[in-house]
Image (cartoon, rainbow, N blue to C red):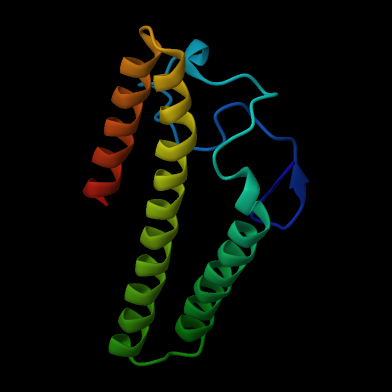
Length: 128
């Protein structure tokens, strides 16, 4: 199960370990629902970290609502962005260590697909 923005649990979906571009990733390229993802062992820590980031975003909303000085809001935006980027890098590292390494052990064309997938994910991170 995953947690939605409202805090409610939603069913896990294949490919939830990454934010795919629907136009770029075919449904058949996504892992099966029973797959254990690279972040599985740190799931509780990741959820805790995301809740902290969510709190930062709620703080931004409160700052705007309270007419806080622009520069103070921008400082908080920067901190929130940095926190999300740090989370994304950790998730990417876990993907490389688990999913890409597993594909390398299995050999064949799968490793090329996993490397290409990781490269595209890195490119998306660099654009943000």
